[in-house]
Length: 122
Image 1 (tube, rainbow, N blue to C red):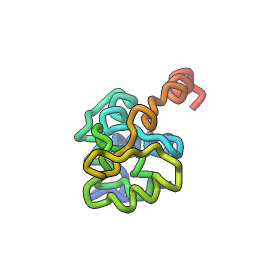
Image 2 (cartoon, rainbow, N blue to C red):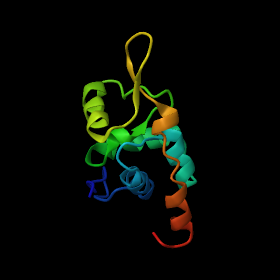
Image 3 (cartoon, rainbow, N blue to C red):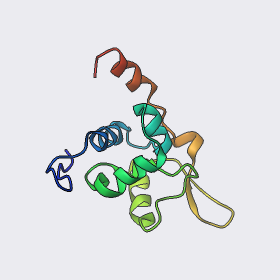
């Protein structure tokens, strides 16, 4: 799974664990924004999710949790695009020739997962 090394306690903070579990549930070829993850969890916000992903996200499919504008994470563009190609994630080119996620096609809302979770099946 993902690493569980917290800064001082030796354990991952509960919220971080929930964010990482959500990232793992996003299907290959699909993405959720930082805000989508926070909404799906019912707590926190985009900045909190981004912070968790920056600190602990390396062991989960981090490329599936993205910025709302569809641009790959700065500094990780090449690696993210490799993952998007491998997973057939919808990507488009801007008029400036930049690769961006095709958010209307790539975005996953997690409704089926949420319904199963709320009914106690997950």
